[in-house]
Amino acid sequence: MPFIPEGRISVGAFYNPHLAEELLRAGDLIGHLAMADPPASDDAGFPYIRDRFPLLLHDYLGQLSDPLSPHALERARHLQDMYRSPWVAEHFQCLHTQDHDRTLDYVFPPLYTEEFLQRFEANARVLQDAVGAPLVMENIPGFFSLEHTQMSEAEFLRRFFDDTGCGFLLDLPHIWLAAHYSGVKAREYLKDFPLEKVVEMHVAGVEEDRDLEGPWIAPTAPPQEILDLALWVAERAPKLRAVTFDAFSPGLAAETVLKSVEMTRRAFGLN
Amino acid sequence: MPKAEPSKSDRDLQDDVIRYLADAGTRNKNSSGLPLSPEQAKRAGKFGRFLARRYYRDRLARSFRYSRLFATAIGLTAEQVVDGESFQTFLNECVMGSLEAAQRVGQMALMYLSDVHEPGGWWCDLLAYEQAFFLQAATAEAEPVTDIPRRRRSAACLAFRWNLPEILLQLKSARNIGDDLKKDVVLLFSRTASGKIYVIEIEEQAERVWRQTDGLRNVDQIASAVSLPLTTVQDTLQALSQIGAVVLPPQ
Image (cartoon, rainbow over all chains, first blue to last red; front, top):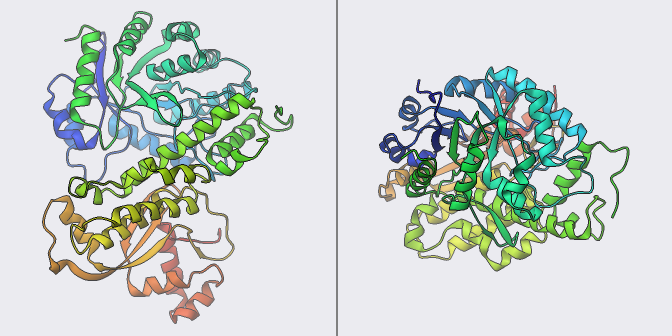
């Protein structure tokens, strides 16, 4: 099974099943593929993809603010058996109610409090044990704040990583947005984040959104500002192994994926 | 600005925030009961609208994917309805993930795509199929515990005049659809608690059981209403439960 080599950074993308042929034809351009969904039963391209690329497990395994069900843990194990991912990713998110009656169906951060920190740490340990692989956790941006938080996002993450030994999946557009809506520069916002724990980084574009009346994540090529930021982080992240263009959508064009990976490789001097 | 109740856990408060974001009616009230400043409440309102528009755009794109194959010919796709003026009103009223909201958006998409030069005589059946699929994809409410068998709220059983399962295969392979695919079929659409969607061709006997599972009759009464042996009805209900078409009392 293909693997991400030690000692150099792999640049990859998310697996978009409708682009399987183009991804397979891309030669050595794409170093790895992250899997946001399990392969469909009629996905004829997946066996070739699995033989060709190292795969990163980046599915929704469950929200770690709550204990994962035996079914969710079994599903996570099954996916990891299929992908043999060098690390398994989840998010700092809490998007559905405990009774499952309401869901936001989208990444949404928890309150940064002692109670949530304990909940995430306990449930992350269970998930990591279940999959038998290192767990990395991805930062999630907020768009508004409640007068209830007890610590900053950076402190929450730092304490989580120190206590659990998990790795950091640093999503740079998420950081850029959190900084933008906090009114500070991204590098300033990042100064208290534990960059020494970063194992993987996400890059992507941002676009104006009509409802937010401001920028939000978009499945477009990363702008130079994000790529410059990626390089700045990489210089401070000795454990960084992979940079992934974070976009998956049935409408995504092959050209966008390939161009974004090329741009990222160029920024890292890998072309 | 209210403070969070001291007895409430942070996790419970997070649930309140999620409900606030998902439910436009709650956001429209004068006081949210959440520790939100007026400025942050305004931002949360924007985020709630953003979430709902994103959610229905995604579910429409996934559900109306066969009619989308004709986007170039008809100049329309289902997900375009979320950018229309009438959707603004919907965003101010909807409970995201509710059956009622899914019915409204599904109807909007159906009306939008019906007003075109039809690519074939099967077009209306295809749209009805995709609308029923959308109801499953866009209804995320938990089902309340029941002490009597009943149909899952979003489940739907529809009769078609065209052989939809075969038509979908033809569309996937970009093959022409001839009159030989005119055939009466009855399809059951359902979704399990974990979100898996099923569309199955249902036999007449199972359909009768499903229709009599109205939340008013117990298993004995359903068996009597459909004139089938009790064990047959029990087995059918069990099978329907496994695909999320009915909800059974906990054992």
